[in-house]
Each structure stands twice: as structure tokens, then as C-alpha cells.
Length: 151
Image (cartoon, rainbow, N blue to C red):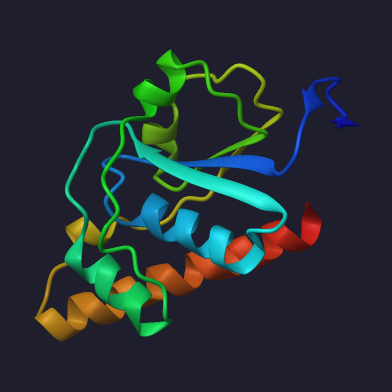
């Protein structure tokens, strides 16, 4: 057990909750990437303001880098809140306006906003949507790598 800067006792790994609108793409990718890249230090979970359906483009671009999220389920952020789960970080990966709808979690020492485009709004051909979703994945990965370095 160690003593955190905000005077909360935290045991084990640093807990991170990634939040977006439907928990269908951005937050799912962020959860998987953090657990994959630094699972020994962090425990990531994800949830949405509303439950959705996993985005097939997110599944495909994560598979391209060897991470399988196809079996993941969309989760509601309010279920975590009702259970009183405690997180060190709540990171919203949606636009700033929607991040304001997120509840305040007990014990959260840091709230972070990464404003990232929503793959569900992408238009174009199948390949164009896939390419745009790859860019979202790569942006999330860059944010995750920076987060790991600074925490």
C-alpha cells in the first residue's frame, strides 16, 4: 500500500476509467491499449454514457495491431458509479461538451479530457472509414504512451 498525493490510500495498480458516449470504439481502444502496453502498472476499464454496440471498424484496427476486442461488451459508466468503484483517473475520450455529462467518481484524483473524433460519425467507403479509425487508434495510442511516461 502506498500514500497517494491526494491523501487517498490506493492498493495495487493505478486504476483508469476511459469514458466516451457509447463505449463502442474510443474508450474500448484506450482500455485495451493501456492494458496491453502497461498492464503491470495500470488496470484500465472503459464505459459509456449510454450503452452501445462495439464498432466493427474499432475491432478491425485493433486486430491489425494484435489486440482482440471483439469479445468486449459495452458498459454504462453509471453502473461503475452506482457500485462505488474508485479510480485514480477518469479519462474522457469524447468531445468536451459530452465529457461534462460524466459523473464525478469518488476517489478520482485526476480527470483528463482527450478530445478525439468519434468513429461512428465517419463517412465514406469501407476503406476510408477504416483509415479514419486507424488514425483515431494511433492518436489514442500516442496519448496512452504519453500517459504511461508521465504517470
